[in-house]
Image 1 (cartoon, one colour):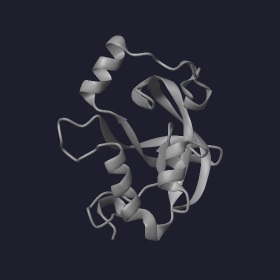
Image 2 (cartoon, rainbow, N blue to C red):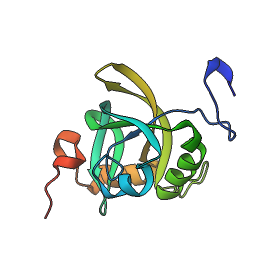
Image 3 (cartoon, rainbow, N blue to C red):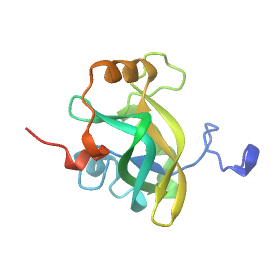
Image 4 (cartoon, one colour):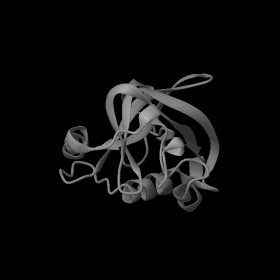
Length: 150
């Protein structure tokens, strides 16, 4: 189904977009195997300029800012898209419109080797972002895979 502006939309009315993953959903990480493996048709390196990466309790949070976050664009298999969107929303404890969300799902443009791509990104919800900016640990370089593991 196509909505305003010609964007393809799912049954819930949300745009059908690939996902920009920057933490535990990246290829090789544990949530990639649990949620994305076998449900995608492509993954390619990407970066989101205008964002910063903060360490969470075993997973990161992206926040809009002045840095760059590194990750991958993951394209779901068309048949898997509705189920995958629901699974990822549940993983990120995201419920549209819920003021208690830890993450928000937002559409952003990220850069790949072949050009810009509009994608879903799970970012820290406003209250979480404020706490992280005040007292969180920013990950230098914006790449979850290069974090220091203790």
